Length: 115
Image (cartoon, rainbow, N blue to C red):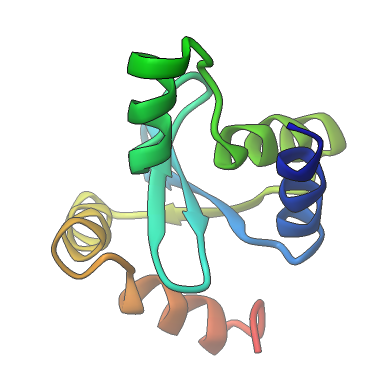
């Protein structure tokens, strides 16, 4: 667990949590941008396999992505992007079909938010 917390804090420092806020709406999701895969999460759920495994077999309800989100919310270290419904759908579809969103990375890179 300690290694998960250290890993989570490192991810927050690297700015790997992005909030996608639907334009003209209160709807939002969080994206954890991993090195090899991205994950969709909210305050209690994560799309990673470890989250599912930990919930079923270990009775532990957090993966390190959720620890990272919790820490990022506490430290107010979340990048928020306002997006259209179509763009949000495209990002989500990319994550589910290709494991990561190149669209999201392109947007962040074009705005100078990642290198």
